[in-house]
Length: 129
Image 1 (tube, rainbow, N blue to C red):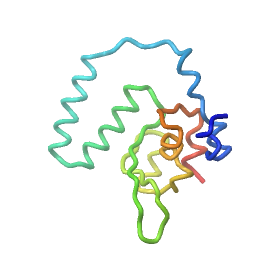
Image 2 (image 1 turned 90 degrees about the horizontal axis):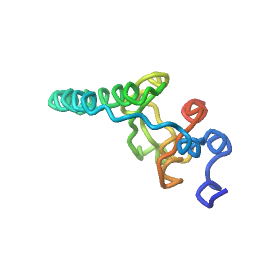
Image 3 (image 1 turned 135 degrees about the vertical axis):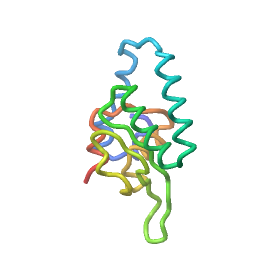
Image 4 (image 1 turned 90 degrees about the vertical axis):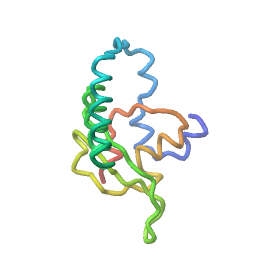
């Protein structure tokens, strides 16, 4: 276990499957689909930040064929410890929109603690109480 993993809760460590990325077959890039999404994102950005973030989460889930995708922001509300607030969500975790997760009990906190992108087999273990 690396020194970064020692501070991560057991449920999070059990959910990490980043090592499996090396054995997965890579997909060919779909530049056309990516260009279409970038054009739609540019239009959404002209509408509002929230619309752009919502679209980004939805398109990330779709393009990655993921069950869920989200964007969270680190905030420190006066009555709470440093926490991540889900500002945009698509897929399974969508009901968690605008909820907070403490830094040390969040997908983003795990990723920051590890210092690199991570793959989780059960992010719902981390995202729900």
